[in-house]
Image: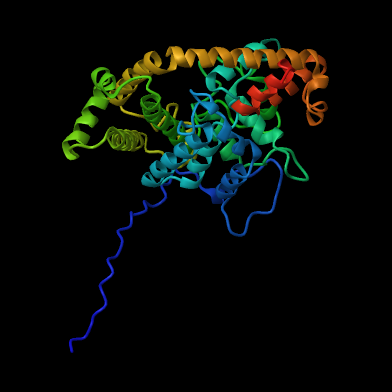
Length: 405
């Protein structure tokens, strides 16, 4: 009887991990935390930062905050939470390809939207207008406020006590804040106050991981807004093909490789390939910039005088065409305009009522805050509203303005 042989197990292919680049952020050389703490025995400082953000209540609330649609309009559209996870995944993948610290890049992807209020950019515009007499509202400054003050989970300090590199990346991921004639006094008050005790060097570029996270944000929302817009019926695949040449080119490869697919699978494959095209362009262009600048360490990156992570000029042109299409067909669609109009009234009325009658705030929000007098009350009201989910804001408005229910 022939001996029965065990089937040979195929060995899985593993991606080659690129060695750490000399210009990457090194957790072993972190500038540390504002409040001294013992280091973790099992996690790097950047891993620890990521984990603290994931466990923060502000991060959990992102599941109920949206970017374009209101949360109750459907379960399949992106929320700030799913968007943040997608940004973190893209940032980690790019950072790993480039020999950067992928934990820090992932951490910044997860953290970048923590300061957004309900109802997306509409909510930010309303709160900025409401807070105009008190220094305005900016979601990046609010993110810093969440990370350093509003999260209260630890016995000896407010905030999450994150590393200098994470806070720098959260505030400066789009570049230096003090440039082109701007001064510290031109920045949001929350940033001015924090850097007075913890200097984040606002006149320099951030580390490469922060620059990667910023571009991962662009990749995620550009491509996933296509998906959400198609799903919502705000535009058609034919319209997208006709007006956005880059999408048309990638769509033709999908149709060439896969015959007779249903539209759901076509769109899924289109988005998958588009993300790959964007990532490949980012890695290639950034690699060329880094080769030209030849930074020897992360400090050389900060003082390079220009971004070293970037899309190519061709990709920037494609991005501009896509954004014009999405602005006309999606962000200014009449259905979206109706939701935006409703959101404006909800947040404006809530702010005005709480400012006039702060005793209506929940007990935990009736004390504390920054500043004095009216400024103190306004900031407390703003923090309370900025932390709301879409549905909570709608329900709170109903409780206060529709007593018949």
